[in-house]
Amino acid sequence: MTTRIFALLTAAILSATPVWGQSGTALIVANEDYTDLRNARGSGAMVQLERILEGAAFDVDIATNLSANAIRAALSALSGSLRDDGYERVVFLFSGYTVSSGDDVWLMGTDARAPDVASVEGYGVRLDTVLSIAGQIQGGAIVALADYGFPDDLSGGFRGGLPPLIDVPQGVTLVRGSSVGVAAVLRDVSEPGTTIGRAAAGRSDVTLDGFNPPYLAFLPEGEPLIPAPDRREEDRLAWQTARDLGSVEGYDAYLSAYPQGDFVAEARAARQQLMNTPERIEATLGLSRDERRAIQRDLTILNFDPRGIDGIFGSGTRGAIRSWQGRNDLSVTGYLDRDQIFRLAQQGARRAAELEEEARARAAEQERQDRQFWRDTGSGQDEVGMRAYLERFPDGIFAPVAQDRLAQIESQRREAAQARDRAAWDRAAQADTIEAYQAYLQANSEGAFAEQARGRIEELRRPAQPEIDYAAAQAEEDLMRLPTFTRVIIEQRLGRLGLDPGPADGAFDDDTRRAIRRYQRRADLPVTGFLTQPIVARLLTEGVVDILR
Image 1 (cartoon, rainbow, N blue to C red):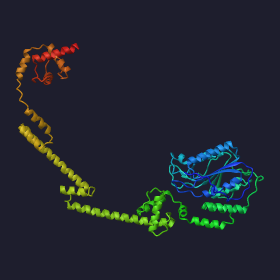
Image 2: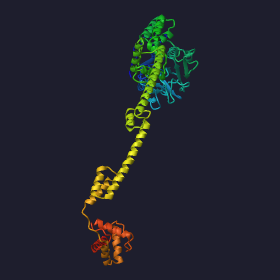
Image 3: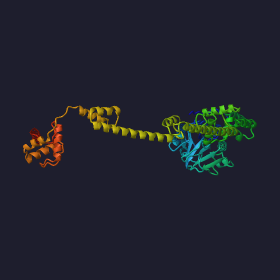
Image 4: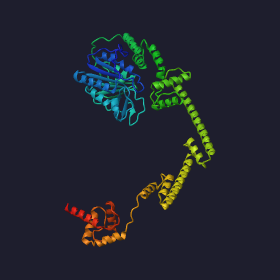
């Protein structure tokens, strides 16, 4: 954000004032060119106060277009001057946008956007800070606010402009109102012997808060140190300043200060010409954020791309407006007046209705084609037809019906395939030959019983195992006449191996026989479930080793 000290003001357009022996300082912050907001008009009337305040022995610093941080820096410098330089008077003037929330007020820097609770402190400077600094000189401090509200819609408890009541510290005067009104009050109050109340009397566009003594002048009467300048010469210099500024506010300030001046007619003509510029005409409409969004929507509907519908008239929107004006044989300015906005809205409404009608016609034609194709493909009675319908109309009127029917067909096919698979497996299992299982796998490679078929083929291909004589195995165990103590040790050993022989009670029941078979399989021995002399020796030896461990 640029900051510049006005060297332009070589004349004052306000009444001539002699220089008195008072010591004061003034800081004027005039914010007009906001980066992301509509510009604030009126700073011209503010900055033209330099000469009048300098004539009243004030050191004046004027800065324009300050960000929030730059305002803080300027206030810090002002506070240091009040503390160190012994000033008896101080004037702080702010011209620009303000927002408030309850009793809190923020003076917005030119980098501001519509604030929320998290961002407001970054976008603006609290008025309380300014009042606190001014309060260092009680009885000699004026804080003046030329308030322009805020150009965008606000939410979250924020509102544009100043609240009805502001708590002002003792000894500080707050002047707020229009730029012309505030400038007039400061002009008059800088006349020695003028009270603040008298300076503001009769002005409906100015409000006073805080310190307002009825008999105490802001600048006491006294002898001037230098003679007052010639009135006609000051009139000429003031007109030159207004003309150099070239703003409505500058001409308003001149006309307010010199209602009978030599250049009144020229000032009124120049003011009227500025009031009739396209930019000024649009600005006077005071379009809200929603109204600007509506304009951008109308431009978009009419195929003039504003590059976003955000309520901010940037280069994209201005270009779209110029294109629309050229298409309608209007003056190509990039700015709208009220008649053009109505015309644009009417065209947008007609085009929106046309688009809606076109959409209805397309929907009707689409539905007609949808229904006709459904009939042509068999009305859901043919699988091929339903698949063709879904390929062309995946979200068509009859898509749910086609999807449900195809799902039923697939389910029936799966059930039929499962039944055929089961029947083929039953035939293979009944034959129980390698050839039968191979035939099953050839027809059902991914069938439910494919793994079982492969496993059975592997079993059938193994060499035939000798027939086990269970009676002989039992007789061999009986011949050993194992005592109960030995049987218990065997059961305990089987249990430690995790073979689950049941209770270690010396009785070889079904659990014990199953554990013996498991042991035999693990040892790659004939699986009989009965003990042999080598098995007993092995189990007893392993058991003794466990005990010794």
